[in-house]
Image (tube, rainbow, N blue to C red; front, side, top):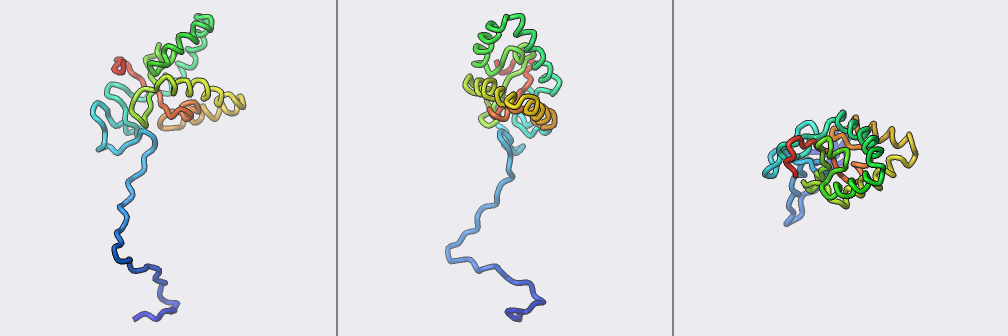
Length: 176
């Protein structure tokens, strides 16, 4: 028998369950956008353990080097197409979930939360609003974006975070 205010005993704060009370189901493990438990992968997709993302078969998360290459490739492409050609080319490619430099290097922009390529609207959000956010404070936000991109397991920069996208490498053009 325990004494109600016995200092040698830990207090008992548990209440007996009310009649008709049912315990809540256990909370499943939490995953980020587009991240699923390995046993719940849709058909035609695979679970990428390093990133924790579900990606289409035949693709892989774009490497840091490939993404940096696309960044620097955009500059000569812009110059060669006299700027306006690059913008028109980009507007057309946004509908296919890519941009001119990404397209040349066989990369696509993927929306992990709905398991499909980024639509024209998400590409506009990513490349217009996201890029403005990237450069809003100049070198500070560009540096933050680069650090997030290099250190994150999904290789997301600020403009990817704005649109909820990741960049994948599609060497065999399985996504069209």
